[in-house]
Amino acid sequence: MKDVLIQYMKRFSDLSEAELRKLTVDVPVATFKKGTILLHQGEVPDKCYFVLKGCVRLYAVDENGNENTYNFFTEEQSATIFNQHTPDKGSPYSLSCLEDCTLVVGDLSTEQEAYDMHPVLEDLTRKMIEEDLGAMRDDFSSFISSTPEERYHALVGKRPDLIDRVPQYQLASYLGIKPESLSRIKKRSVANHLRIVD
Image (tube, rainbow, N blue to C red; front, side):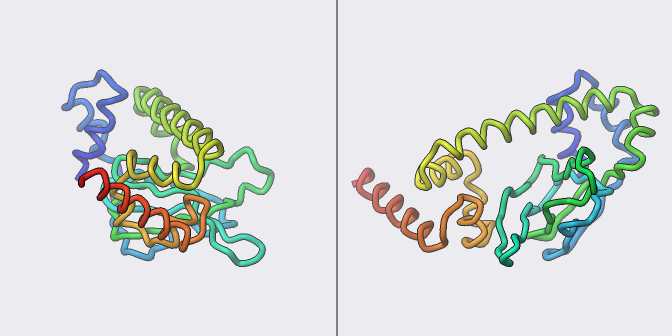
């Protein structure tokens, strides 16, 4: 299962596969059942995660009790809440497993020790975070300047697996629309596709 992590790390490093395997030999991997809450909203995050298999949802419950979905993390993505800059350090989000998951589990309290033992790891982590932040910035810019239908088509183009892996009401929340609006968009999309095929 760590092969997924090693292949991902290759994108950010010139190290050989043997060196990467040595680097990840002590990396803790754990399995979590579908429905497991990895982090509750309001808790102080002490772990970071990297998805080897499965799907993790990032969401929050507002003051009216409504759940709002902000992201889904699947294979080769990190699911980490960085909020050390906030006064109370409590997470504004929850993380939950939408499927049975196999995750790399990092301990934020020992992060610096790991970097001291393996200096190359800090550079790797920085490059990974920079890529994640760049992708999030691009996604946010695209989101605020697009229509719901454009958001749906962008999702189908970039992350088609989510369409079947994620409950439709959560997908609708992620796209910033109501479930019935998502149903209409999907029907129009299918109808347009059939017209093109004909």
